[in-house]
Structure formats: structure tokens, C-alpha cells
Image 1: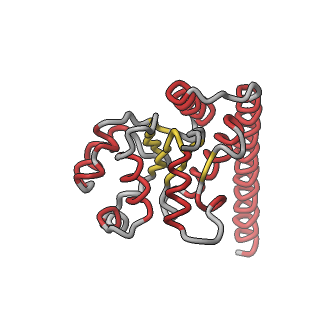
Image 2: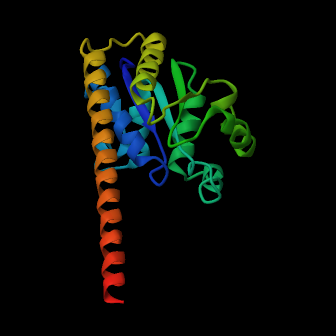
Length: 210
């Protein structure tokens, strides 16, 4: 049996593709680029179910990325359909006694208070996702600290080594994101000022015309 030293990211493509992509990047930075599986990047050609099963068999942790559309009116029925990919991934993970960690990760505004109503609607066989495993929220405003918590949770449960530069890279990325937000705010402020001046000029022009 091969060594289980990979991390599998489960997500719904029409739910949290962006958030799962960012998390995928940071987990690769933390644990190594070849240690993290996400189907868009890793599936390739061939039989999808076989490749997913092989990836899960190599994994010691499954991160289930869950956003506001993961269990909405369109996607909830899919979780009960035998052919659904996400259902297959999660059922395989939840039934694997050798898996060190299943980590429900809430993104795009979903919070822990949403878990109860969501869990109550899940098929019975998927309810252990929330009944047996603790969820972590990954927020935009707390991305840096929340990512650290997720990496720490995975490392603690799996004993996978974390790259030594992670904290520095997360800090630098957080500062860059903050500066970008400030620049965007400044640009919006300048745009508002320009629009206000333009309205003033238009009003004065109209008065002169009258």
C-alpha cells in the first residue's frame, strides 16, 4: 500500500471555484506542489472516478470547500444522486477509517451558524461531514490567519511537514492584498470626487443655459 501523504480538495465547481483555487495554491505552498490534489488541475484525461479514487487513496486529509451554493436548491439534490462527483468524494472520505482528517471549510460568507440548517437537509449518509468533523471558516477579511489555522489543523492531524517560508509568504501576501484594497478604495474615492465635480459643472452649465 502506498504512503498516504497527500491532501485532497473537494469542491463544487459552480459554488466556490475561486476560493478553492486560492486555497489549493496556499496548501501547495505549505505542503509541496505535488502533495495537493484538485480535480481541475490534476484530473487530466482518463476515467475520472478511477483517478479520484486513486487520489483519495493517497490522501491523508480531505478538505471539503463549502460555499453558499454548495447546498442550494440546485445542488442539494445532486448530493443524493449516486453519479454525483462531490457525493462520491465525500462518501469515500467519510467511510475511510485510515483517513486522518476531513475538514469542512466554509467560504464566501458561509459561517458556522449556517451548518445546522445545511446539515439537516443533507442525505443521512453525508451528515457525518458536520456531525463528526469540526468546520473552519475561511473569510476574505481574515484570509491570512484563517489559512494558517487550516494549515495548522492539517499538519497537526497528519504530521505532514510545513514549508519554513509559509508565515513570511502569507504575511507578505496579506500586506499586498491590504494595499490593493486601499488603492481600490482610493481610486473609488477619486472617481466619486470626479463625478461630483462633473455634476457641479453640468448644473452650472444648465443654469447658464437657462
